[in-house]
Length: 156
Image (cartoon, rainbow, N blue to C red):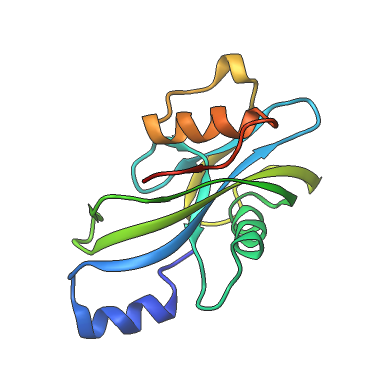
């Protein structure tokens, strides 16, 4: 999906200056224990599913929406995995963002995984033993989400 209209409006006033934005990352498992990943169109890396929350949108609703928009998979949110404020990131277009990330463990309940928007080059289910390389943060999220007895993490 394109940059949300509310961000475009804010950027008219802020330019590329740092903008704090709430986001959600969904760690999606199927009944076989596989994890759903997308290959991002912006950097070609495999990634957990994530996106910015709309103004006033609850994190669980945002996770359900983001997964559907990117993969055509329907999910149920099962639990919170963690909450983390990320360091300043500069996007390819020069915009600077402080992501405030809510990570949620989700279970697939319907749909067929496919590329469903322009944010992904590929969408696939992966066995835990055959995962492509993920960054350290997403590897941590995946490990935490895969342990149903783990308490949510909060970075201090």
